[in-house]
Length: 360
Image (cartoon, rainbow, N blue to C red; front, side, top):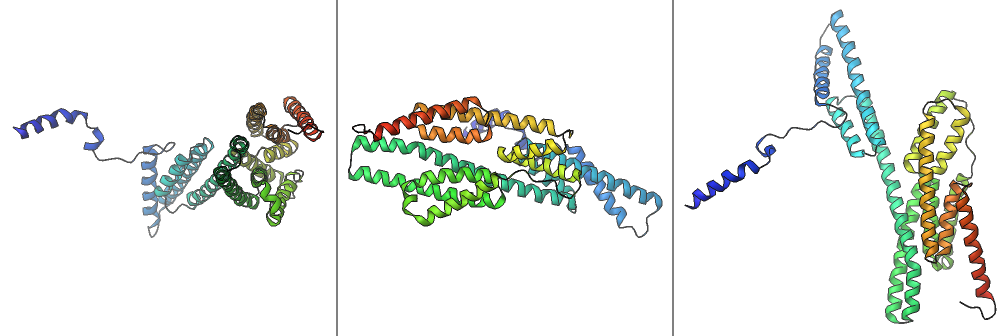
């Protein structure tokens, strides 16, 4: 009786099971490389290999070899273009999959192997930038917590619990600052001076009073900041002795990399240089529009974040945020107004705190 019930239950559940569980799994072609294209490239590669092993190829076979070479080169370029498009869209995994599958079809292709290596280097660089950006955000959150801990200390008064809580918070701040310094060192080595500058500024504030006591640490962070500032103040490079076409191509690539990394300071310099050297370049208008879009977003975010800090009484932090944004948009009226207003408030508070009987 039990077996009959189990058989009936299996019969009822069978239609609900996924169909793929009863069929062999087929490898799905990556986006941008249809399955028939992959199959055709495999067949062409096998045929080319067969013809190349012949002791003496006829004129027709030699012509066929050249045609197969040309078609496989088209396949390589198509795969690289598809991977580049996915990479620009932020689908790094999809781009990697395209190059990987294409290289599996043509394992001896130096073009695809080189493209994979370059892609791996770009992804590693992008990952380092993203991780540093995350570290900066963690540090900024700790700085926002600093005033809350100060208010908590005023509420609870001196005591062993308050002291332990503050010591634990200070350890977190120092650990975050050290992490940012490590990231900044790597950023300086690869030339990401804007990102290094952002991280070092946050690290300096996280160290707080510790930085005044540790002379060696203070000198090291000041040297790194000076290096970043020195490079950021440099004017755009002069035209080199190479051909203008090669310079423009390199400039376009560097501009794209700067925009991908969110390095708007470097992107602005590259744009200025390209507008002087190659104003008719068809790639320039869309890149310029992309820069303006990123700049608008960055400035609007900074204004909003600074307003929130200002409303919460964190005026110095608000000024720092607005000043960083003003370095990218020096003509922005709202940023100038906000900074002027906040600096006047800070001056009044300072005068009030130092006046007789005016201690806050």
